[in-house]
Image 1: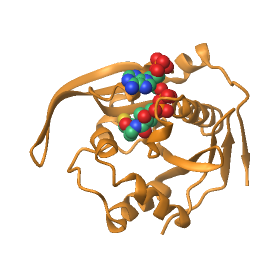
Image 2: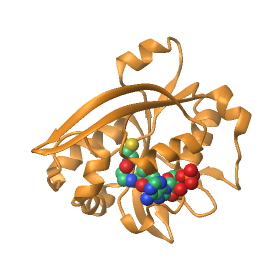
Image 3: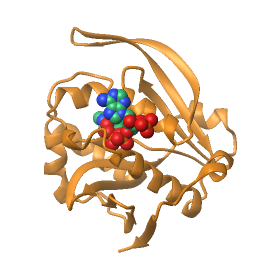
Image 4: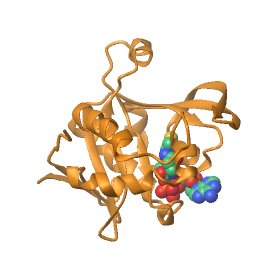
Length: 202
Ligand SMILES: CC(C)(COP(=O)(O)OP(=O)(O)OC[C@H]1O[C@@H](n2cnc3c(N)ncnc32)[C@H](O)[C@@H]1OP(=O)(O)O)[C@@H](O)C(=O)NCCC(=O)NCCS
């Protein structure tokens, strides 16, 4: 079951609202596109079925705040504010409250127009101000994912680890790096901008 929270975040052009059961069919459409899968997934590039995606969304909704990203009144993607679940990351920063931020803008018409940046900025504000985050950690961005790399760098994230990797997705080979980014509370406080962003509860 998808667990719904009650947080709504607004930026100048983006609305983040709770992901609901009814959003599954829209989200399924985003996972039919090979390029989106190549950028965001580690395993095969086959179009996903609802049975593939449902357990992932259930997990995210039960372990974090799962949001639909809306622009122009329409769902364009999803983002999750998720407590870090990788033991090696938590062990690297003992005692810290760490979050990760899986994001997919599934509607390709909205790529490269600043919506991803704004969605992440909203959750940095919410995570640091409301949830007491000490750090965000983004594991494993593919080295060929230029929009993603630029998004994290632009928002002040630092590269902390780079590992070469060969992705073999049923014969589709990508020789690349996986790059980890991090941003601490102190780094965020030094440069944050609110740009008219607000949060509320439904
Ligand atoms: C990655 C993603 C979330 C970025 O969101 P977005 O709204 O497309 O990105 P933005 O418009 O906010 O731009 C981010 C940066 O990429 C740059 N950019 C935009 N289009 C680009 C392109 N074609 N090539 C290189 N850089 C590009 C922007 O200029 C911006 O950098 P800047 O601030 O230094 O100018 C989104 O593209 C997406 O969901 N992609 C598919 C799934 C995915 O990759 N998820 C992330 C996995 S880690």
